[in-house]
Amino acid sequence: MQTCKNHLWFRNIKLMIMIRIVFVIALLSSSLSLFAGGGWTYEKGKGYVKLGQNAVYANQYFAPDGSLIDITTIGYYATSIYAEYGITDRLTAIAYVPFFARNTLNKTQFRLSGVEIPGDELNTFGDMDISLQYGIIKTDTWVMSGRLLFGIPTGEVNGGETGILQTGDGEFNQMIRFDLSRTFAKKAWFSVYAGLNNRTNDFSDEYRLGGEVGYKFIPQFFAIAKLDVVQSFNNGTADVAQGGTLFSNNTEFVSPALELAYEFKSGLGFHISAAGAFAGQNILAAPNFGVGIYYKF
Image (tube, rainbow, N blue to C red; front, side, top):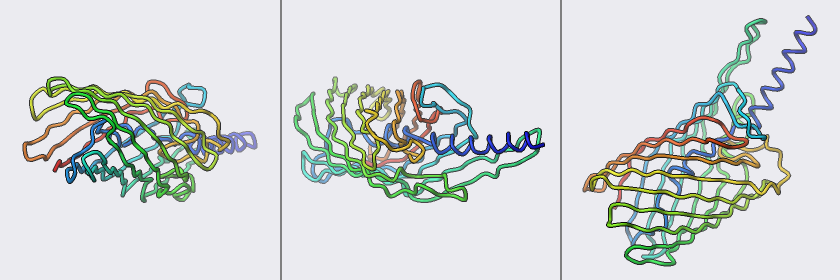
């Protein structure tokens, strides 16, 4: 009997540690929406605004050594506003605001003992990002821009009844990034980017690389294939358990994504997207799905 109790106690502790370590959703709006513009900036007074919904539902995660481990099923859902606005013909302001973020943790019931660990949920604001993008080069085919991003810790780090659910990482980060893009016959384009992300509160800094290829099948319908890579410098001392649902400490991933969109002549459009990670560490191993409605003005 005592052995059974010790086993259950160990399982419970292990469960809590695993959840705190890996409740990471690095693939939400950062890979699908936040950098949707490539190197292009908007003209003064022009812009783009989108209402989006993203969802991840996972029962596996990439451990620190990159292996896949089963976990209690976790869900993360973010409803957000993403906007870009041309302050001048070369300077664009960008904001990502997840005004409703929901974390869920399924209940766990042990078959042999019947012992049940209740589920949990957290509904609150998420971490938001504000950035400025400046057009360095603007020609008919090539554009290059630089971007300065500030990650604002507006989410919650220790929420829910268990105190382990999060909608943010609790640290203020600053990222500088450069984008290079080119169009082809106004039907196709590609973009590449590279960036450095400085994280506070003893979190490790990161470098980020990626790119996208897009094609317009008809003037209103287009598809975009993306690849995003995040690698940690592993120079921070923060425990990975104190990371939030957007980024834990020492998170790494290689993430392909696909986005389809249909845009009316009025500027109103709809999109669907899917992303995943075929390699990573300290990150959930599950696809991220997104839908949204946007308007260009």
